[in-house]
Image (cartoon, rainbow, N blue to C red; front, side, top):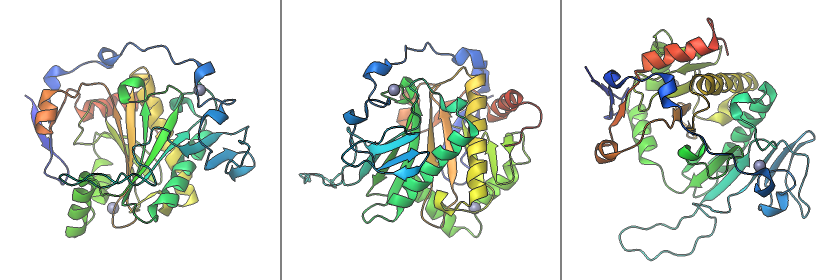
Length: 328
Ligand SMILES: [Zn+2]
Ligand SMILES: [Zn+2]
């Protein structure tokens, strides 16, 4: 019998339809050839084809490109050439309500290696990735006119990645996204933090996948897509800037576990992960959604997702991939 599940604390619903249950292998998709590294603007040697980098992570620390581009990097951050938001947009002609697309849009090239896969990053490299997210958030969170900083990764063409070379994106926008606003309103009007409650209750449920001293990895009760997972801090922190050194190291570890288990169970599926965070009065989370099911008429017409894999089953399979007693 399909089950309608309500979001933990919002008026949102998803449908868990286990009758449509599939095995992980049913989700395998035909992959296209990865793009050629010779024509890849993100590869070392092609730094001149991108805008000047605002942050370059090297063995000698973090620098910015001068007139000469910095070589021998581990990660590079630069403005997106095809930006959804720009610092000085032209004036719109307002018909209904139109705001200037004022903001910032950056690319983080996560690795110098063209064929690198984030699920196979070393622990050190994953730590550097988390640090770059922390740095970019700190850079934009207090910028005037920025209401929200969206940091995310699209992996695979089906998940929206236009280039196969691994990268993340940062989009700082002048509006508060409605979903975040509704979560924030619910949090500030309640006498307790619903996310702290989720951490506490899910960590003893069969939806728990892995944990360490600072973080939990769960398949949420309210899972919109097959094999969706959330990473939540045990401590009530609003954003990545509030993490201490140990929390950063352990976040890198559990994010690595999340990507590794998903990659091995589902044969490197396309996915998106999104970091949900605000300057204050919020509870940080990272939500990972493999792109395995089509968003079709019912979803677009109702905003309700049908998920054919119960999160309890997803968590069990992901746990198995990590071995018996996973620790981040
Ligand atoms: Zn490349
Ligand atoms: Zn909390």
